[in-house]
Length: 116
Length: 110
Image (cartoon, rainbow over the protein chains, first blue to last red):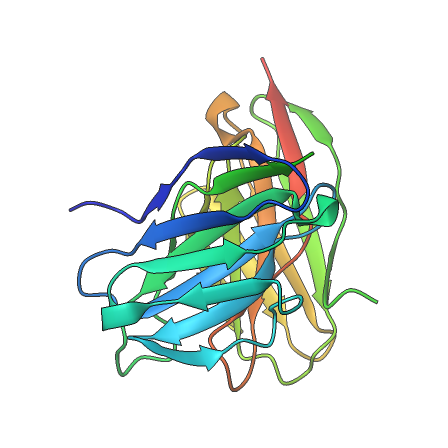
């Protein structure tokens, strides 16, 4: 079974440009999460989708970040305009929705974003 | 204050050594606790969940002390392949979001 995939693996852009990251969750996983790790800091939660609905977007840093999950399958995270402090590794994770308290979140390999 | 605190290390240990990692969390309403492992430039992967009664998986033992808000991971008979960053992770009460510590780097030396 394919795992969580993310595209691109790396992106280098200039300050002020726009970048769109894509995440394809594991097939059948209704939960989709975005996390980010900036250099020297811990991995931090950005937001959580259940199918196409935003369940929790409390971690989104500001309105330059827009996440979508049209159709409840893959998700995109757009940064517009990008700033230097947006550099980091953006991870996507997915999990099943079930009756147990915790369904393991499986992480994708991440997109390494560098803003110059 | 960070929600999850870990000693960043690095911990440099010889093969065969026993090594212990500790972690504290600030939110007493936290319900679920985990150790994730992250290899260099890779994604985090679940190593094990942590239960109040303590749990063991082969050479790995995890413990939780809710009163002290303290989580630990013990690795016995360290292998070279155990070299990685170990992330202490807590799940919030009402949400599914994971809260990560900064991670502890372990380097097992031959």
